[in-house]
Amino acid sequence: MTALTVTAIVPAYNEEDGISETLESLLAQTVPFDEIIVADDASTDRTRDVALAHGVTVLTPPHNLGSKARAQNFALPHCKTDLVLAIDADTVLAPDYVERIKKPFHDPAVVIAAGCVLPKHSRSTPERGRMIEYLFGFHWHRPIQNAANSPVVCSGCNSAFRRLALVEFGGFPERTIVEDMDYTWSQQIAGKRAVYVGSAVAYAADPEDFTYLRKQVWRWMAGFFQNVRIHSKDLVLRKRLLALWVFLAVWEILTVPLWYAMPLVFLFVFDWSPTTAAIWFFGAEFALLGPPLLYGAIRRRVPVLHVIACIPALYVVKAINFAYAWKALIVELVLVPLGVSQGMHDYEKGRADTSEPVRAAA
Image (cartoon, rainbow, N blue to C red; front, side, top):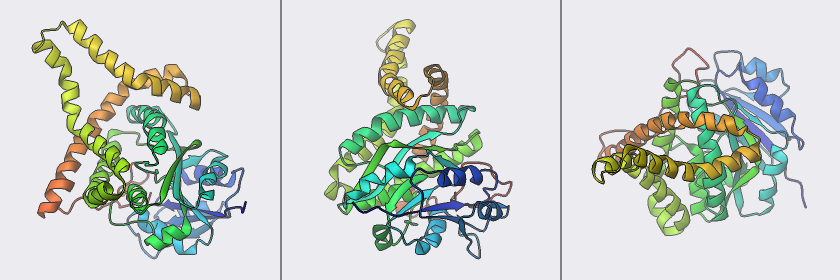
């Protein structure tokens, strides 16, 4: 079996504080990269110097390109390997990530693959809420979608791509604010395969405060509905299982208010006691959340008591998700088609790595 070669692309804007940890994890892989390229999107700090000190290739455009996809596309022509692995400049890969992520590509139909994502830290409320989201999503939704050969997204912070297919597509898509979902859907619509590799683990830096959590969630939700607007027809015609997962995600957004209103319905319509209503509601929540979280905690060696302590933060994060999901639905599916709004197109980071209000690449 021919060994596949792989290049890492690390898009970075003002990442001098965290990029060393990322690059060290890339240099410590059990199966080494053939090349590591940092796409420094005209940073105003020492990102370029820090990256060069690690002995990797650093490419810097003459001016800030303004998005992660554009920064990655700037580096793509310099890649000559079979695979390209895009890693955010705040993400750390487990030492065997490359070894594990390469395996699916021996199937020629596979054009994109990504592993499990866990948060680097779970100290603040947003980070704790994201911990629960990741444990649940990557140990419930993703395995089911993968078994059905229809992953909804290969995470942009740690995805591997078959280079020739990526180049033939025109590079990382720039038409939406979430290039990872756009490419994942586009390739599956075209009859290619996307794969989730649960044994490959990456650790991402998530927003530490609510200001940047809101920025990140707004970008994710706007990007999701941009893709719904662009791809819905083709999904229904050519990739029905993926269309089903997307429909279920939209349905969940639409019905969230009904679910959380159920205790009030039981109290005031069915005249249940507060205790009975609370037991029913929290019992149902535990039944839905408990098994995947327990399995995820055991598999990833996260202390179960810590997971339990993080659960209240999930509902804070869910409230923010819900608000921005509805905003994105209205903007991207109603106002944009009517010509009232241009939708979201400015890329903003989900962390405060610089005091400058800039558009950034990672």
